[in-house]
Image (cartoon, rainbow, N blue to C red):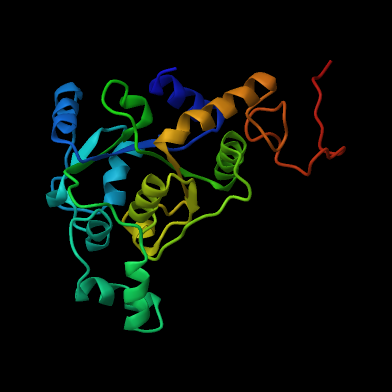
Length: 258
């Protein structure tokens, strides 16, 4: 099944508000050149902005967005992507979250970080990347129940239980994708202070990030459930998310008028 078909099913069956974002970290020049040659349209930031703002173009406008270091104005993301070393400014930038500067430094150093040599990053709607690249991660901006369905399907597909999240300070979108890519682990985390404002998540969206190498298995699990009844876990047989009532409630029931 193509990524475009997968996106159509995900949007319909999970009632997603945003396109799933296919993230690609380019370390190989030949692979990057092939992407530029094959992509019908590529958008780049006019001014340096945050990584979570790059994703706005992909998840809200359906655009294929690419940038290198020059288009990234977030020092925290630049550190996570291996485009800058740890410096005093980065530590002080985390001081408002921590007890003291020593703790701030330890917390920043404990974040997942890409190896040196990253050339650039593409973020695009999942349905736009057929023939362009295989996603390193698939990033969903979704609500609580959509996140739960994705988490349950991941656990079943990968035989993982219990499922743990990895939340870091001030780096939900950027750090969350780096962690999932490197650790090959599902991640579910709230918006950080930066992505809430800059990344436009005022609706209270939850970040769900699935490694690209595992995404197919998670999607196959969803399809198995659809074929068996419906995409709804809360009320199997109904369309997602099913009736938002207590399980098997005998009071809230409807029937066709005769």
